Amino acid sequence: MSERKGSEPIGVVGVGWVGLVTAACFAELGHRVVARDIDAAKVEALGRGEVPIHEPGLPELLERNRERLSFTTDMGELLDAARLIFVCVQTPPTYSGDADLSAVETAVEEIGDGEGRALVMKSTVPVGTGRKIRKKAGGLAYVSCPEFLREGSAVHDFLEPDRVVVGAEPADEWAADAVAAAYEPLCKPVVRTDVASAEMIKLASNAFLATKISFINEIANVCEEVGADVAEVSRGMGLDQRIGPKFLQPGIGFGGSCFPKDTQALKQLAGNSGYHFQLLSSVIEVNELQKRRVMGKLAKRLGSLSGKRVALLGLAFKPDTDDMREASSLVLAARLEGEGAEVTAFDPVSGAQAGELLPNVKFSESALDALDGADAAVLVTEWPEFAEIDWVEAAGRMNAAQMVDGRNFLDPDALRSAGFTYDGIGRPGVAGDAGG
Ligand code: UDX
Image 1 (cartoon, rainbow, N blue to C red):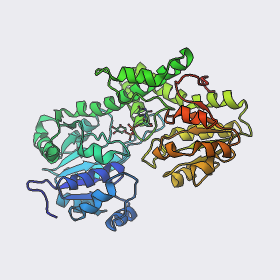
Image 2 (image 1 turned 180 degrees about the vertical axis):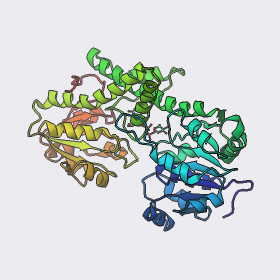
Image 3 (image 1 turned 90 degrees about the horizontal axis):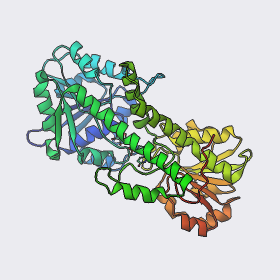
Image 4 (image 1 turned 90 degrees about the vertical axis):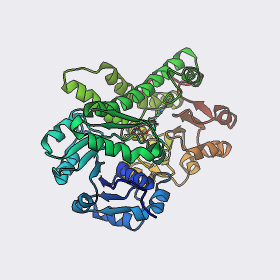
């Protein structure tokens, strides 16, 4: 398999989820890619063809492009091979909500100030980070090229992006041109801008999407009070092209590695600059409250939760991933246990990860086993296979057939005719108290 004519060798620093998808997709576009990680075991496993994360389409992509891809622990090997170095290291939140940039700082130090090379920042960083790095880094050019990948559809999102954002200062125009050229085979719009604006585009985009979710969650809560159906409301709103139908699905809150972290980071960034981001503060608060509202719905059906058994269907923060970061299931399980309930759970993928995080939860091998003997069930993650559950059998195996559908995913009529009481989010006839 040969490299595409005119292709640019690509270096990737940090082979986590973003780095691995970025490396595989650039290889798919015809570039030679050298990806470097400090974790020797991971590098060896990747060299053997093992894929350490659950991401649809990724194993096929890695297999197909094996000859163009190499994994190493040696930064020197990467620097020899590529002048464009995509930094994909983690920037987790600190206790205060600021982004922890220590992995970025280490990467910058290791790359050094190589003239004629460019550091291309994929990781989400506070606005102003690029300018600071550029100042210190001597001859190294700096380009901000934030990722907009969703877990579970990251390969698709990389290869079919709505836009690619490329931010650089005028002195680094050659590097911005080279990055834009690397994405050229995609034939997608490239937003050329300055570094600070590129950094802000990423944070603002995620904050806006999170705002849409918290907004529709609050609309759902009001629907419960006034007898409207949020599914109808969402459909009617979404057809207005100025609003759009996406990210208008109510539920039990957003989770994952990005929205909670990025909303917090933008709020904190604004606060550090002396601006109180009122709307974003509310978006975050509404999300926390939304995770807890399920407790109110359960209490309305069960009374005291003490000694009751509650089954959680799904644990990951969304389907098609095993990621448990900031998953609503973590908050829910802790609160249920705090009220004295026994918690059983089934997740098709994230069982192993979840086991460590939820030591008191009893894990089952199937959804039906998790429901066995339960006094109520909560659908936490909308895994497609949950739509196929035999609800008549489920009702027979439960102690009491009660379902709180935290994602409005199941068919209420099918459940009710199987003998369930069904409560969704913002749907008519639901138990609607805010949970404590
Ligand atoms: C997100 C962004 O979409 C992506 O661009 C960014 O790079 C990383 O963060 P991701 O965290 O993988 O991606 O998940 P996403 O599909 O966006 O969902 C985030 C959370 O919002 C999930 O918990 C999901 O359940 C929730 N969500 C999403 C809703 O509650 N309602 C919706 O309508 C959409």
